[in-house]
View (cartoon, rainbow, N blue to C red):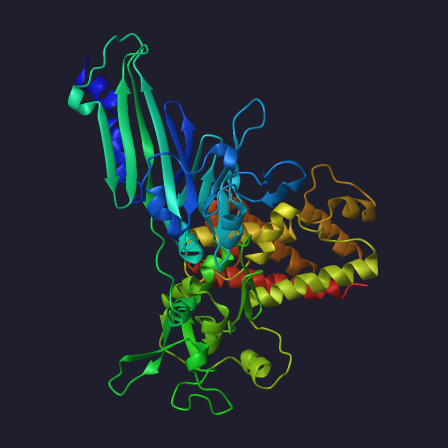
Length: 527
């Protein structure tokens, strides 16, 4: 017999694994597969010494359901409903048999609710942080359940109960007559401060058989004091708010509780309304993920988790109040903004001044916000006057194109292509061909949407046909020769016709958006 077979029979690897049970990021709470059986439970502190006296399991799979228990006999018997059969012991994993098929396995409800877990993919349990990002905490299958160590410790700390990992592994050597282990290694008993297990091997009832059975306990962390709980509750980043006398950046925490207000609080601290400046690139992550975030005029939101008011009416920066950064953003999001923090340069925009301090409504001046406002206003007005939409509503799969439309923050070809595709789908691909055909007295075989619109506008004597059709053809030309294909001479010609040769992406997109706004405003006046 090989050394490998002997080690397998002696369960050497599994004995070594007992030492490592709680030293990994994921802890196995349940496994029932082949030779291995793992189970787990919770033990009250006063029961732990008793549990460690015996290597047998304190809980069994049949003990995991509430039941009716009868004490005594006859009419004098006392009948009680009990959640668990042994006081001081309770399961953390519920494994139920349902006739044929695998076990139905789940994490105990108390743990799920305390950790605020929700069903994820493939039977996993997940939780969301304050930014809405999901983290897998528990993986669940009929054969195995694992949990992340951090959340498990938090639960044990709250409950002040020990975690017990039970194991019962059996190895049988078929086709072998005698026990391959020396007499001195056939039986091993271990009793230590946090574990008790027994290993035995026999060969007198058939094929050699070995069994490793026992438990190991994980002590709960001590409960935190109230001051520790308060310290862990909120964390705040510090942001650059100015310069000191030597020209070095001066920072201050965004903790709203530590800032001055208009009522005399924290007089020596910076004001809650201190302006903090950021590179405009801070918004890129939000524009690029419209399924999760939305950037609108003066606001960034991640519903339902947070909303941040911003002053984005600047071409090169974004300004936010120091107190709002701490009050409205989770710490992980504060760190993103901190990475784009710059020294203050200039004052708040007139738009933000009017909204924040003068309590007056003000339209944003950034092209993307003005375009979205003009687009919505035009669609509503045209439909009301004409009874049909000139621009068909965007398909659900394309709505993100309007949300993420913006002037790029840098000269990035990929970002330029994305904005060209968005403008083309919003303004050209959405043209209502069917209604235009209906309004035109003649049909031209193979006629494209822009040409149809040009004939329709000419027929109704619209005064800006040439201007607006040129704007659409520029967008279509740049999309078809650049964004949709490898750039070549046709793309360069399209830029030249538009007077945009050698211009960076922000200038190109800004010009196209401004022309589109002019077009929408003009078309809105058609009656």
